[in-house]
Length: 442
Image (cartoon, rainbow, N blue to C red; front, side, top):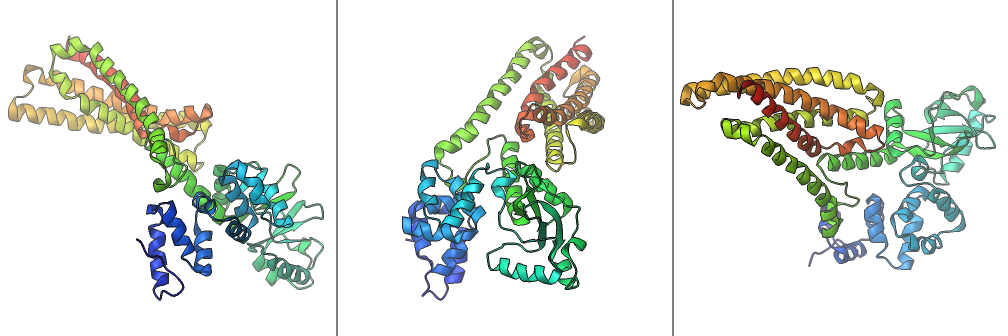
């Protein structure tokens, strides 16, 4: 039985850190036992450090009294995230554990989807009136700090009807003259995000403008809350994880690896593998179509892996580069032809490099072992031309498919490397044997 740290354990801090590292390897009962073995301070730190999905899994195993304590420990936005992560039928009872003001705050946040700005914002933010002096504003901020305002790097200037009219940094406020009006100090050029902006767009806004936080406003310009860089870091990690999973040719996991059940893991991975397997069957179909050519020149089959791997690898490279560029906002759908044209020229250049290596290899093997006989020159031309064409075609397909998916409303990351490679394998074989038929078999 694993021993867990307690308040009486002199090495509790070290053992707690070790336990945190191995948290994902523990089953449900061991996690509950571990959590109950922590003292209140470390338990609080650990509970707050958990990701929402892990926190929800632990939270639902606690008693109602424990749930009341831990739910009230969370800020309003994190409490809303937690309730969104549990089953819908549990939410009414959990909302009843909150006091009136916190419940109203959480219910307002639950209106939004979890993956949009409104669902991730914190409705508590540092605010002042434009008619205040700097001295009055500082005094008011001290009062707000006592109300658990999480971030006072930026102070937002709002009217009585909650319309955002300006922003001032805390540093600027401190350096301002005591009797200077906020309206004369504030910056009116404000970067805001709408409450329905998706989390990927939200992360782009913050990264491009180098902000620690960004205000969320409704259609009328009324301020609804603030999203900090900490929230966006979680978003970026989630988006990156999803993209990596899709690039690997599978559905994105909704939970950590060890928390994903065997059946769920099969469903996430099996569907894509089955689709790719069916796609690869077309490779066999293409080879069967050229069965006569292969029978005439068996040597052609030797270079099949070389040809299709070259096209698949170049296509995977192109799709990965384009997907990442789209995720960072470096390219958009309108730049499709510019990207595709650039990749075609790059593909031709890469193809020439690989073709040269392939032709040299054929020449060396012929001189050393006499492997290919009187048709060595024709074979070298066939392989060289095919490699150039297949690599150029692979880069074109790999760079174009993410744009096509985005245009159709799908995630460009679905243009995963295995998917592109499978598509290019089939067309690569057709190109290879077509060239062989013209050059080698005439």
